Image (cartoon, rainbow, N blue to C red; front, side, top):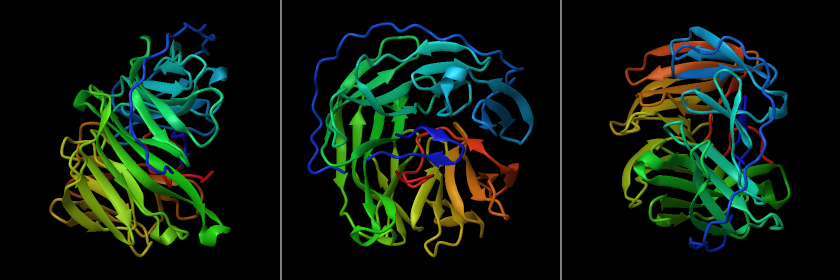
Length: 363
């Protein structure tokens, strides 16, 4: 699933010929809330990002790099904690935690098994993919819901995946869009090291509960030729990477609207036009941040990149690059002008998802 801790974002698992359908929603049953842990002084302004050393205490940083409070999450939260894009809430499935460290809601999907979950671009809703409790790893028909924490889940529709698993690439009820990837974990040469590849993309209308766009991509037994896909936070654009080139496509029509050099997309910026796109360079030597519409590189680095995510609502993107001593990550915020702000050096970030399929460890 796409729950991220630090720089690890576990993807999901490819489909043969999926067909979205609709089914009725089951009833939900309220769950008891565990007791919260004591909180620290919470962040005072939004948005913020969080660093953590133990998965329990989350230290907030503003986008100008200023420390701004901290949150202690309850012990029941284990270590899979996903902040909302602006940092106002944290998800430790199935609990939602506020900035004071208190559990404020429980997401109830009944007896279903959660397969993937992601915050909306606005940070106040969730998109959820579940399977029946007795369903095997080859998913078949999976249920799609949205949820406003504290309210019952809202049924959207279904997507059928038979030989892989779902990864939510974008969730934005405000723009009526949800992007789901079909991710397969292959092996080099058929039996070597594992790698992840995207075999299909669906773009859903949340109001209609059906796909408005679908694309399939060929599989491979080499990570160098695997297809990777990221979506803009508002679900407006897709970046499809293969063989050293990243195409930018309209997510509703599939029309090609831009192309840049890059072997894997890491993420778009958070402005409405998703004007910045971070990629891993085609030669594999560090990240590039493109203004993809003008085909202009605004920033680059020779350090290996692992992930990127957007400043909500702004033409700015945070890129995580491996620290020079190959320890943790350096957090570099890049603006449309190419100006950079270092939010942290050699630190562990707790990043919101959706996040790149290849980020973190393959499973």
